[in-house]
Length: 600
Image (tube, rainbow, N blue to C red; front, side, top):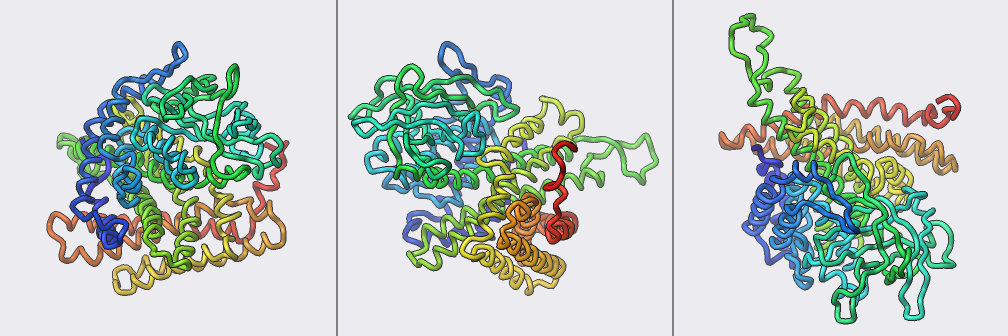
């Protein structure tokens, strides 16, 4: 069995590119060192391979069932999650004062990727719970943190986010779930929620639903949305489990992938009261929820990367072992077949996967490192604001680009295996099905594109975008020290100049009030800028690899050479696509915008 995520690659990104050991010199992470970091990665890999991976195919074939009012899952799910919780991973990045390990988010992201790569369905419950607990850590009252967050971090209770509704979809301003204030200050919620992952299960003692709803009389649209805690079971004054709350499954959704994670429609307040508590201020629910959503979006990017990476590793292992055909120059039909990795087109598909998944991994870990930099910034307001701006403009890219292109990597993995890849005898088709969710949930990639172009580009009069350009330009300047990287340096500089020009032209259209024309090709803009950002990630890796390859050991030299070759592939095969995209964006092409509805 291949490593689902290459450990050498994680070590390279964490210790050689991002140099996360420097974080241990800050007060927040002073209790850690390289040995403790390595121990976390070792434990994550071991638990993922021994507890999560073995039941992944069985869970996919035996999705959750709703019987006699209860959602049933195969027993291995609880066993695996217990191992994850006992290993401290649910609260890994939380402060020690909350019972966590106070690990850097960068390291936690890398470690948790193992679990998704091994079994996305089972892992989903842990990710949702950690995100819900983190929201309450930031926005909950002290009482709510004790009452709800603490049991979640201990793994006794799980969490969900309940945003969408059948009639609203992604348009949260159109949600109708009502919240009626009671005399005791609590609320009764009435309504229906859709697409709720982890909506119900028997894995945990209780489920903490974080629900968006409207308090009666609230303003219309997104400005009238509040956030509520609505537990599956009511919580007693002493923090114990009380009577069943008025939250019930209306029906399970049967999905293409991620089958092990329950997904359901939920009814609130039908037949009995669904009692909830307000989180934060009334009518400010979206601000609270988007704290959770931004974390979740980076997590989606990492999850997509992990699934794409696992597919790449499976297909690479298969290509090395599968004999088929002969070299084109070999005319002897009696000669032995060669492993298919020796065929040029198979190498192309493997190299394309490598360029996508390793570039995406570098981006997701870079974003996670920005979170750690914010946490250890020492209170310098200007620096913190700059880091926040950079993180905000990269978040839609970190969600969308990996979920698009690591899905493409999964498709290529199936192709490498040929007919076998299309069967359930091999895991690559399941990985594709699991990954197909990631361009859709936590804000579709179309919404990410609108967010990037319509909001993030214009943050603080373009300050976030200028900071991104400056960061990329600094890497280009660093590459000047390596003549062998001139090709990549020059190509990235040219692409960066074009991106700046395109962005200025689009901003001018926005300033004229032509909103629909401005945003008509937002998806193209995200794809273009995403390719440039990934090219930046590859140049960062190439600088480190080029400096190390000459003196590397015989064991390490092929690894560094692989980095340089994958960088070359991305710059020659992928980055040139941005030229055509930039041309389309510059002329504000309206082909899609002006297509008559009756002409489809």
